[in-house]
Length: 202
Image (cartoon, rainbow, N blue to C red; front, side, top):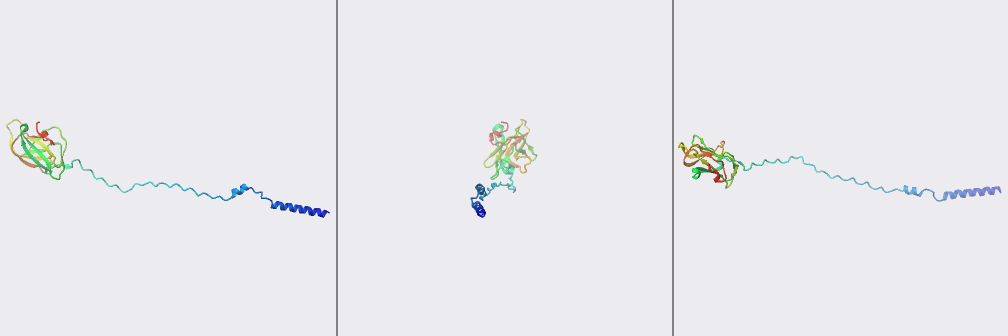
């Protein structure tokens, strides 16, 4: 009788052990889910920096200096110069100057250098103020007026030519015949565009 009870108890214990081994899995399903491999997102691409243009180290071409307004200063050899006697204001010599073909040059706003004879009797200035420079080119003409005798005396020297230079440093003065003129303390105006402004004493 005791042996049957022992066998029965052993059988019950064996069944209980089998049931426990084959029972449902008690592991945490949430843990399993979290343990599942995940697909990693690719790293975001780093923003591409916009290349900054670099200044060229090459030297910029040097600009040439702009020419002076009106081009070079006139010399007597750049001009066609003429002289004629006028009766206005008691008589005077009108000097006119025009640039030669292809020449552009500037006359100063002062009077030309005027001399008579080999002794170099020079004319004084008939104007106190300096005028504006005059650019000669094409058909532009400039005028100056000479009063050969500014005195009321009977003393004078007679000449047939007038010597014209643009300045004291002009290496090419020109001698122009004007007929018989009496000279005593001659004066000359500045260069002017208008011939009426070149009448001495007016």
